[in-house]
Length: 124
Image 1 (tube, rainbow, N blue to C red):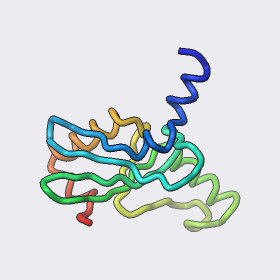
Image 2: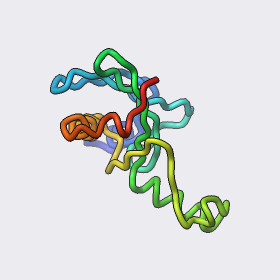
Image 3: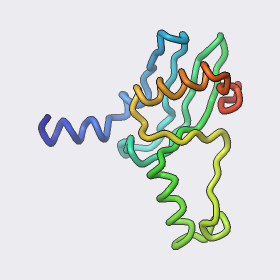
Image 4: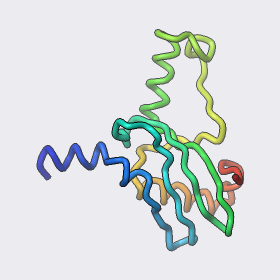
């Protein structure tokens, strides 16, 4: 893979991020909400995800571990938020290793199988 293709896969365009992705295992679809103009960094970011499952729409937040680490540093050294970086929280947050579609599908599938889905995703 050449450098340009690596960058494209690491920083996908907006259309790729917002398109629907499907899981045939548990029959749901999802898309990421990414309103920013700049490309999504799939290794260091947080996004909202909308899941269509069981005839309803659900929402949750996916954050990468690198994003959470970056927020701790920012809060401790720059903004002073979250008691100067003592903690970090977001509603319905699920920490994932990256924001690639396969990782997201594996995560949602596992939450469904373990019956945790409703604890992390809220009905819209």
